[in-house]
Length: 466
Image (cartoon, rainbow, N blue to C red):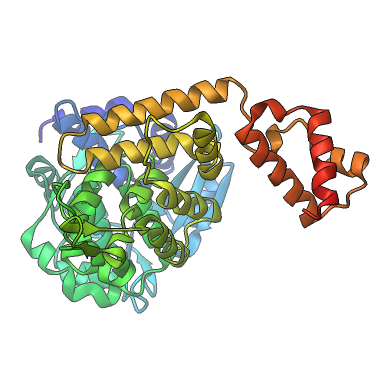
């Protein structure tokens, strides 16, 4: 076998991993680097101009039992010792070391009911999901072990299950979603027999926890074109199980100024977003409310989608909750969906711009600009006018922010402590209402943002029962 595919592995392999394998060899054991780190390094070498292949997760397989590994190294964490995995800590980094193993049945469609240890690297690789993940590299002999022709599949840009695809997918339901993810992140095509096995395996996929689905989605969003994965999910039934709300946009016609239907526009918008997972999920969901708000207008002889951004936010909230997105992720995505429609006009007064900033919140501005830009680019038509309007809005916002315009109650010349000490107010909702009322007035007239002026106005509001 040519040494070419192992060149990237030799260059990038941390010396700590090489030393780990050397320690195992000196104790009479064999070891190999396995999994995604091998795949990505080989792929970086095969593809001219491909990714650098830099990784910090280097997994090692060995014929040493977990207890033997723990005896050989000073600091070892038994992270998954039941399944043969420990984490060896070297120079502050953790390296997973797993004993070669085979697996029994998967009753829950997620984990093997039990594992048994083997002494053959090929037998260990045979239990893996796809051929491109079933390669092993011996760093001490600089040799690649590739019993299922994963390197040929990488060269051909093909994703193929190891052995019988139906059996592989039945073992772990997440594998069908991983197939979709790899189609996007590795830019490969799913081999026909492997693709045909996805739909018959959906019962196993339905057992996958929402947390694992969310994690795969977030990994997918780092691809150049995450739409490749979501097309696979749509075509093979995965979205019908995990996110049926998205399917409502399929074949939903847009109005005439779009070059795509809602689904096509959604995919184009998501791809056009910068590779921030949260931002791209917002791109995926930004028009999820359009099918439910779509109506035909006799006046314009076209379709309208009034309040689709509000409806979309209402759809996105429970969907993201169901998929176990964190509270911060969910709040940010829902806010982006709610405010993604920017209808800026040069006739807006400075006060109108300030009101808009307050409504969307200054913290959301950067992502909102990016989402709006992606939304415009994803319409499939000339975007120059819309991009010019966005640039003009950004310039005005930057000017007003630089001028020190108050956008939140924290920007006021008084705070809650001032109102309590000067006006005798008590902590509670009334205090917050007065601060918000003061902010509204300062947004309209920035010159009012003076301590004594605001304290006097606060006295009037309290006296008036505000």
